[in-house]
Image (cartoon, rainbow, N blue to C red):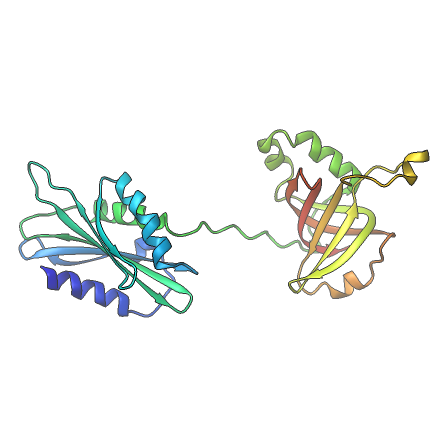
Length: 267
């Protein structure tokens, strides 16, 4: 039985690094009469063996699995499904190996001869544990196109509307997040960062009288992160002059008093 587990584990670890889901990687070797082993794997970008094993212990414990030992040097964690009145303890082995900046994590569940288990049930438990190790993938913002229908609005008016909804995350999501806005206002700054441009609009209402000469604290802004290949559009912008950009609403930072728009383009 031990040789079956090693064969399956080595087979997985030696395979090429191919991005796939845990469920797609799931496989079974052996049968009811000779013993069987189930295996699944995930890949974690930038992960470490030490951190992964540290995360796995409480994950396995919540599923009733007891961790017996772990060795960061060899990348092997041993655990077991504890024995009951009707069944002896069943081993679970975890193998972690680095391949470039990817950490491959394999989990192998072994059954002795004469003991069976539902393939789908085992897959569910293995992948439930392994998928918790993989950071969630943030959905990419949908690019704004020149012919997209966008809400035309002045930056101060957009700030006012967003602040009125800021105490209710659901209202913000329904009314603003992911929607395209054509924003016009005075440009406060233009900067380049990580190969992209950031244009900051003044989101405050025009000041009157003495207030106009007073430096504003925590000025409201609309921050536009420009889409790729917008050099020409950005080149036409000037600070302290009005401009119009179209972008997709990402979020509102109440502490910074700033609205974030992504994938902005010139209009």
